[in-house]
Image 1 (cartoon, rainbow, N blue to C red):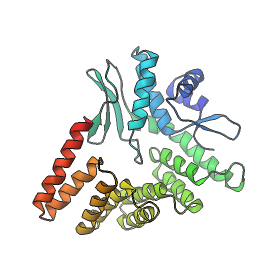
Image 2: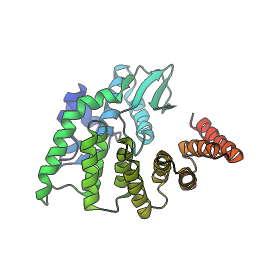
Image 3: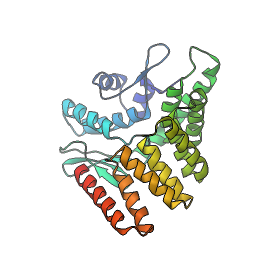
Image 4: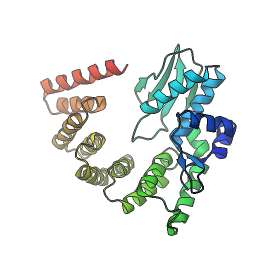
Length: 282
């Protein structure tokens, strides 16, 4: 069974089911449909609903909440775990922090401050129950998940149980060995667990399917640096910037790699690109 039921979401967040469904109808959330047609919500949906609750408690008009959260949904980190994201208010801005990067999706006097990791720990039992139900349904052709659904479940599980997330990505790849995003995310989890060689294998398989997968090239560069393969890492970062010229982190890492290789001019050019992109993003 994929995702969280509306009643579970409401109970987890201290909302009533009608509020959850109202945001779903407003286009802020992107719930899937269960076997009986019921709405099933993802972990990013939970993040947005928790933000919506905070904005509503700050007496922000519903129209502004919907507008802000639509923008925020587009800006949540793609292909990376949400557990380190922090959503809060600084002065008159909503500020979203993802590691060292901060941005605001919409201006306004907002009283909002929560860490997604807190929400993840509370959602953990529901996520594990969903993973167990999905495994039990594998023998049923009607209820079994597709590769994309296992991938989505893996993405949700990253915030609460890394081992379960790895299992979900592996199951996605068993169904579709060419699922590039599943290779990228599984590779990243392998890399974070200290297995850079396995990570490189998964990133390489992702790039065989999609040679312009910028995140795969970027992650490959990091893994190659971990393996002390600096020249190969530089090529990977260069490929990442070609695939997605607006990927600021790739320019920063490329600058640092050029600097370590003694290529001062190239390092300065890449650092300049990074600074331009950061100013635009701010």
